[in-house]
Image (cartoon, rainbow, N blue to C red; front, side, top):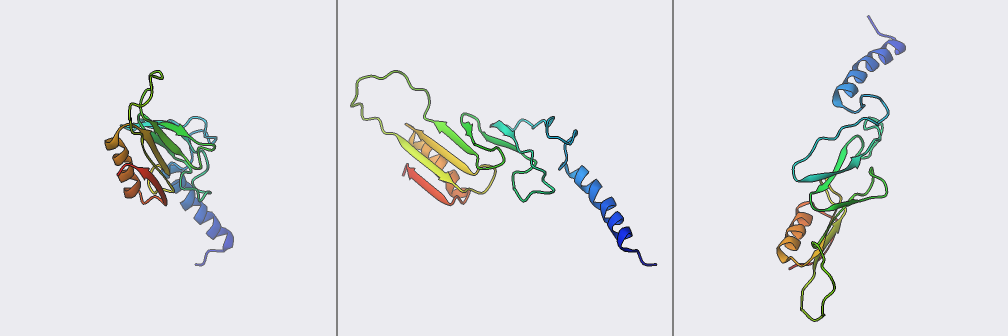
Length: 148
């Protein structure tokens, strides 16, 4: 017995729809409004990319986006480039100059993994070096640093 064109299409739909629903590519209300992102230890929630994961080639589609705790999220579109920026800690007032404080920085973009951009600017060499090592480990396309 052979299945005709319409039968094949119906059979394919019966196989694909449950897979999409079970994979979590569709949310509970179909509109992306009631997504509850899980709390990630050591991370802050930046937002949820509501693009349909089944229909989009965007690697962030249908995913919650995070930055490390202590940093801030910066983006123009949560489904696009996400930048996690850490300032060098609190500032205090302006004092007299000439203290010789070194400001270290590490910044990278085009990274693999959960974040596409990492950035640090502050007084800590060890924190800066840690960010540099993360940039290297994440195979980032562009790395700028003054830590080594």
